[in-house]
Length: 125
Image 1: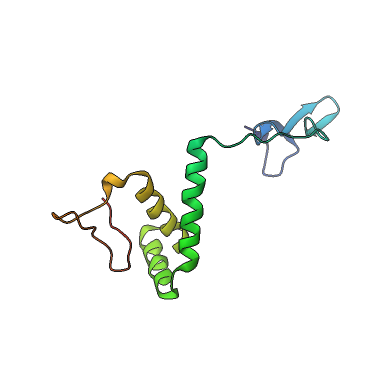
Image 2: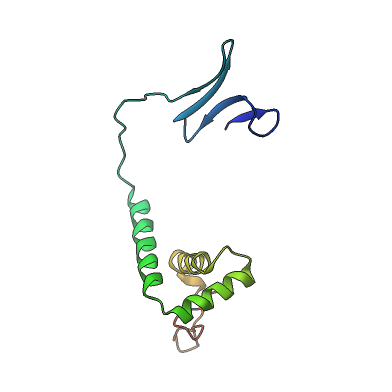
């Protein structure tokens, strides 16, 4: 975490950001910004199985969002306003990710049929 002394945009800072890829130091010569390993090849690790599954879920949700009709996107924008979220995309993603991560929260009728919001999205608790 970077610690800044003085007002916003001060010239004294110490610490690191972005997992150490940017380091701020104050030395006798003044403030320094250091990029450790600059010029070295970085290695990206493959995502874990859980991360890959989460990424696939998100890709599917993004694809579904692009396929929605304009009036359905308007519905999600209205819902976002009611929930104090940034926009319809945020509301849609948060709903769908909750749906994907905890299917036990999905509402069903006594016969096991899903309960929807009238727009094809399943309701959850």
